[in-house]
Amino acid sequence: MRVLCDFHNHSCLSPCGSLELSPKVLAERASALGLGLVALTDHNSALNCPAFAENARRAGLAALFGVEATTAEEVHVLCLFGRVDEALDFGRFLAEHAPPFPHDARLFGDQAVVDADENVLDLVEERWLVAALDLGFGELCEAAATRGALVVPAHVDRPANGAFAQLGFLPEAPYDAVEALGPLDAERARGRRVVTGSDAHHPEQVGRRAFALELDDPWRLADGSVDLEALKEALRRTGRGG
Image (cartoon, rainbow, N blue to C red; front, side, top):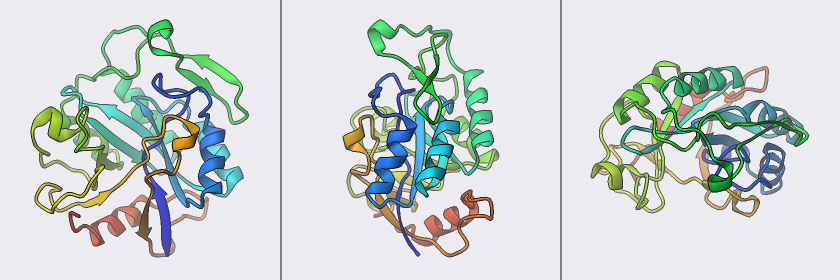
């Protein structure tokens, strides 16, 4: 089954994102564009994943829940889970490794936690969510993989916050695919499937860089959640590094 996927999207929780991009807007726009599997990946926090889960259910959209984590070297890594509770638990783990850097909404924008109907539940102020954690690239990938996450180094070829820019190369670690803006050869991609991601911060960016993946049924479980092992196997099967 050919499924149009997008593993990289933000919401109004990310301070660099638009307040207009609520989990509700993300789910509705993704569904309208024909996407079948979409992830919410705010910076270092999964607090808007419960709202996204409900909105995805309403829109008939398969969903993944996670974060775009920032390593100590300031490399961004997508850590994706099939269930909201797993994503929230990982978010709590990341909070334990975050620096004591309070958020200033006047400088960086609001960090809004909302419900499925766009009601504001909280404005996160105790920490700036974009700040680098005290976990190195390998440590972070290992921590996520150990918890069963689908791990994807984000925009590895971007001039900032990608592995090539921050580290000079993409180290070997337990990740399942590689996200890139342009084509990568197999060596640079470490033999992993290269995917694209919208990295949407505004509503009009949703779906701009989705990718197609062939998934074998049943890739969704009886409760509607995504079978991450089936997803990982599909990525392994199509991993050609380009």
